Image (tube, rainbow, N blue to C red; front, side, top):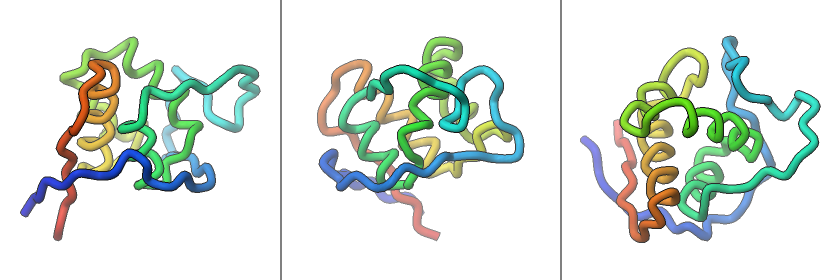
Length: 115
């Protein structure tokens, strides 16, 4: 059963954790790479989802590549793939949050999976 709930965009920031799998994407840097630039967020909804799932700021670098190379209707599927390794709940919410921030939407409904 899926329930829709609003996740507060002011969710407290946690320490950075890197979302990784055994197959890291070569198309974007990870935190361990020599990246010497600013990490700019997509917006508060995306930040809330990253914090909620302890995905960390380093994932923003890979998400920037994803959003400029894959059309938005395919983001969730890519995020669930082996290179990203996110769960359905993480991928669905993250793709919705990014799109909401890009489109500057407010009050987005996010999913919470109950098993």
